[in-house]
Image (tube, rainbow, N blue to C red):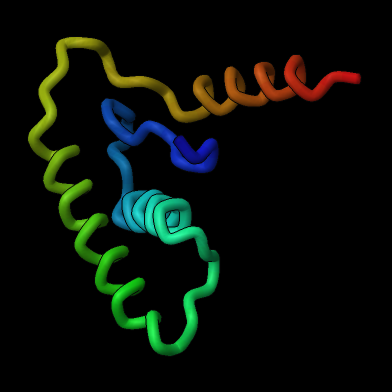
Length: 89
C-alpha cells in the first residue's frame, strides 16, 4: 500500500472531501504507475479519481465503530515518531 495514503476513518473532525480526494488521487497514481498521465489518458485518470473518491466517501459514511474518535494531532505525532526511528542514522 502507498505510504502516503493515511487512514481516514474514525477521526474527529471527520475526513474532509479534500482528504478523501487526495487519498483517491494517491491510489490512482499507484495503480496506474504514473503521477502525471498523458493528455490521452487524462480524462480516464480524472474520472477514476472522482469515482474512487465518491466510493471512499460512501464507505467512510457507512462504517460503524464503537472505538472513540482518534485525535489527528496525536496520530500525526505517532507517525512522526515512527518516521524518526525508521530514518534515524
